[in-house]
Amino acid sequence: MKTVCCANMPYVAEAFETLGETVVKDGRALVAADVRDADLLAIRSTTRANRALLDGSRVRFVGTATIGTDHLDIPWLEEQGICWRYAPGCNANSVSEYVTVALLCLANRDGLTLRGKTIGIVGVGNVGGRVVDKARALGLRVLANDPPRQRAGEAGHASLTEPGETVPFVGLDAIRREADIVTFHVPLIREGPDRTVHLADAAFFAGLKPGAILVNSARGPVVDSEALLAALDSGLVRHCVLDTWEGEPAYRRDVLARAAMATPHIAGHSFEGKVMGTAMVYREACRFLGREPDWTPDALLPAPTVPRVELDVDGRSDEQALWELTRAVYDIEADDRALRATAAPGFAPPAETPPDKPAHAAGFDCLRKNYPIRREFRFTQAVLRHAGPALRETVRRLGFAMADQDGAEP
Image (cartoon, rainbow, N blue to C red; front, side):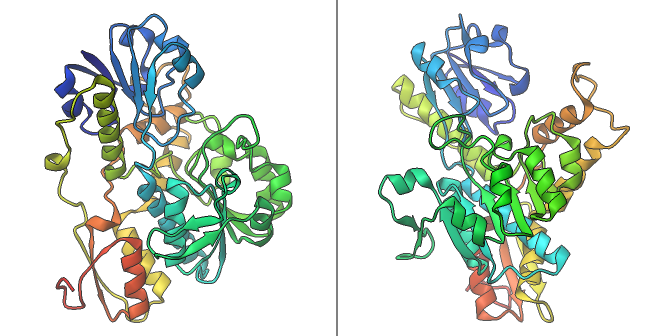
């Protein structure tokens, strides 16, 4: 049994070596010759699993350690009898923490107050549902939009952290009309009633509440780049936060220049999110093979990178305190600086970059491939001095472990 695995899946070799021979490759550079004699393929979104890659191979299982599947040619895979699986929800918490930190960063930069503002969350599945809960913890009024769930008869999204609380679903027009912040968490769907390609197009922006903040950490083509630039010019959009990009890795540098915050498709790249993706694909491969899984990553997880944050919040607003706390765990501005550096004139791409690949595209891929370990909030204990009960409750709801003001476990 031979498995070809994508290199940016943590512990993928350790997992799949329990099933036989394992070969680890750069996912974006995979070609047909690499997989011809493989039985299983374990990938992320940088690999397109389609006829060009798999025709004539003996691959019978493709597992992607991602929540999206637009890089899989599902009709062709099913036509060939190739089992495919994905990892829904594996990085949902990671993305919700990314959105939380991005909004706190913008608020701190601009002197904005998030509490009381309205956020429109488009797509309320595994990821969007987590964003709902984080947004409510921050005191935002939430509008939730999910047409497929609404058509299925659901009245709204049931909170994961507030039992009995439900956020009713609304139409996209209500979000455009009322939301101060719009964030997308939809899959990339190219046709049909739930088409999401260029969901945020010129018509969408024309109906937007002027001065809105737009966040896209779903898929790049969800936002029409030309329409976004026009909306920024007109003031319909005040700030945009972009983690996903049309044409990535060869994204448009003019769009980067206008983004308030720009990152290289890493919103879901918490270490836990990536490890969970590996584990989910491994378990699906075992199920496909009719074997009991006998590997878990538990013994391999490293110590938390930021095990404890001590913060005296006296003289700070709650949102300033939250920004300092979350920034200590995840420095989103460092990711922004790193991406902009790879787009700057004179950036030298890695030596192995193909000559026809733009330097900034090579830089984008390099940042993703070599992304540092980022742990989730739950692995950090927060010690807050002079914090009121409302702030402490918000910190708990965001997922941090809490200590009392003397640093002891409550």
